[in-house]
Image (cartoon, rainbow over the protein chains, first blue to last red):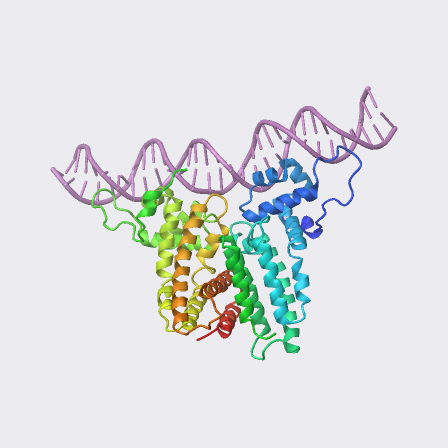
Length: 215
Length: 215
DNA sequence: TGCTTTCCATACCGAGCGGTATATAGTCCC
DNA sequence: GGGACTATATACCGCTCGGTATGGAAAGCA
């Protein structure tokens, strides 16, 4: 299997910045099609989403999909970019909260809102990809893990600053607290995937906040 | 697709209680084969494990597998029984701890030991099955969720008793605390699946215990 | 009106999937 | 020894998978 480095390198959510003026114009909107593809990947995971499902949801045929997006793997990466941009926008805002507890609150409430909404699939796409990609798609898994790692590092740095600023007790290790917060959010994703009711997940968030150390 | 009710109903880990004295004797040990199958399911999930992988790991051919275990679904259920019996034995012991915090500690340390061992796959088979079964295998998913639900109920009842006994603060809801503990353990599974190092996971356990309310 | 270029629709490809038909090998009862 | 019976080995089934070849349709340019 060949790598698709070139299609990974220029990761842009907008597929075709400038429309070619020659030839038959395409009869679908790439952004809308990508949004539909994201819904399918989000609901079924990378390996669980078949090309038949994808093309049907996107409203296009397979040759159109391959011409526009490359292949299944490249399509997933572009959908992942869209996911990060649209659905994970709360991450940047959360990191700017004034205290460590405020950061945790923003993260937990953001994840809760994402996972108890009615329009989008439940669970976190990252959790699905991390746990479910086993057979061939470990390049997918590694990429998703790398993205999660970069966000974990941002939280860690924020918590280190918080400890310096006195938001956290002396006996709390920032790294441990970041792992802990990540674990709670990932656990939320698993429970959402299992169909937990929104009230329970809200209780989970409140409990975590009630037990949070420091301010 | 036909249901396999009959093979689900008589769930026994030991496959054939009495060996038939007639005909050619089978040339493998069903229990050993099932143990090998469990390792494959555990590493790859239900849908990720192919019959080719399973038969190779079990050291038998496909007709032997089908004659002895039924089909892939029945094999998974029997492997799941074995998993619960062998790997989740700590659950029963954990419920008998004297305090709520003791229960949580036993659960967290049991899950930690299971997920940082070197011989077995990481992550929790339940988490894998809950998150990863999307396409056809929702009967698998529902069965796994039902088992998890029964264990959740046992924790809930234990926490209700703990609250009556004064182990938990008044403002802590047992149901919320059970969801919280489950989420932390499921999050541990996700991180183990992502390849987190044992030290980090141990820190996660310690942090959770340090923040635990009550005694 | 050609001609080039790009996109769409249908049908198809090899590979792998879960599952099985068939024939052969091995063990007990008579 | 000869059936009856059961397990094994090989080859195969229909199906779906991701991906593609091919021919025709729609646009700009001449």
